[in-house]
Length: 101
Image (cartoon, rainbow, N blue to C red; front, side):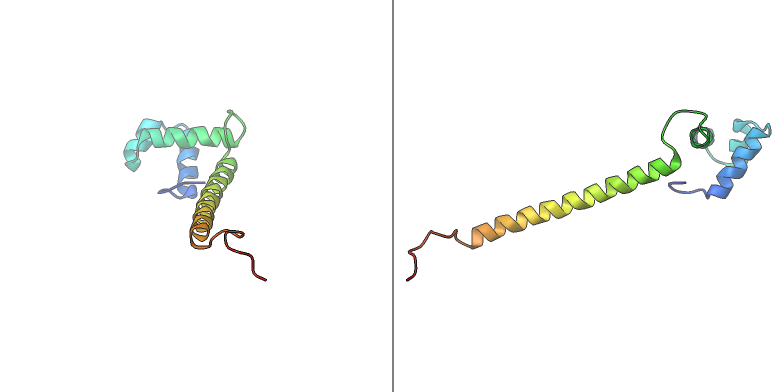
């Protein structure tokens, strides 16, 4: 799962070449990308394969979706609270006037 920029097939090919013996520095130079980017891809690949501890790509995607949904719900809650405030300001509370007969 890539957040931006490089397709997963490209990342997979780069990682395959690294595993085949190419150095990260040479790959980065040849492709015009940061060596840190390749190291990040390699680390995430190791996590996804269970070789290192950490959040897998699917877990990261799920966490991102949950955070986005939480932000959405917080925005809705804020709007609802503001609407309630406006209604309270506009409508006098019951019992504030003489009872009707």
